[in-house]
Image 1: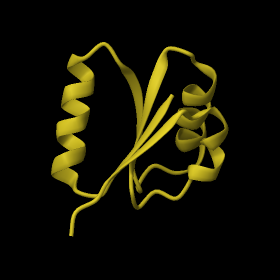
Image 2: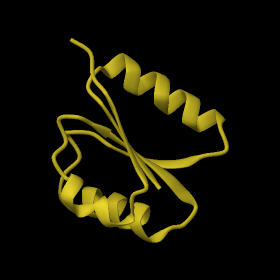
Image 3: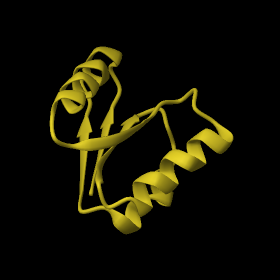
Length: 79
């Protein structure tokens, strides 16, 4: 399991496009996803062994809920 943080919308779009074409299944959570939808995405990521990647906008603050099942964390940030 991998969590990827990215701040730039362009980079997030590139990553989403790549992941859609790849063999990796993923969940994507951005800062506008709230409540039940966010909880469902986190639960899917944690419980479904086929969901390999959690793609997060770096503005999303929910890492503590996912660390237990993560092997790697990747942070894409640029200045």
